[in-house]
Structure formats: structure tokens, C-alpha cells
Length: 54
Image (cartoon, rainbow, N blue to C red; front, side, top):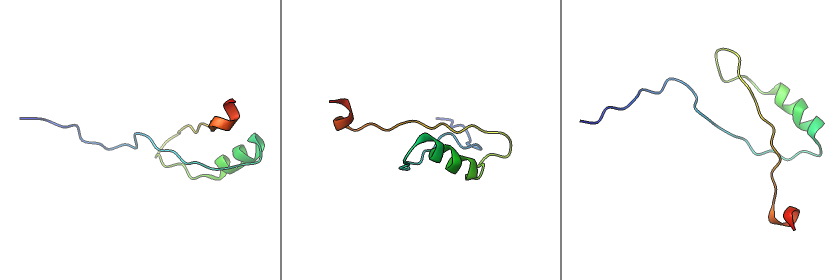
């Protein structure tokens, strides 16, 4: 018999947005609703494509 844990919390998720700069990204993140009943964190990370690395 295999027992599984019951999930009651959001484990992870992500959005991909395109902004002109970090200040615009921060402004949008501040407007996002908090999906958790208490405090939560948001991370802003750059997305690189192969052309950025050459």
C-alpha cells in the first residue's frame, strides 16, 4: 500500500513576463495578488537566450 501526502499549500509556480528594465518588473510584482493566506515572497530573475551568452 502506498500512502501519499495531502497537498494543502501552493508548492511552486512561475510567470514569464517581459519588461524594459528591473524597475518596471518590481512595479508589476508589487501589484500581484498574494496567493497565500499569510506573507509570501516573489523573485525576479532574468531570462537569458543563447544570443545573450555568445
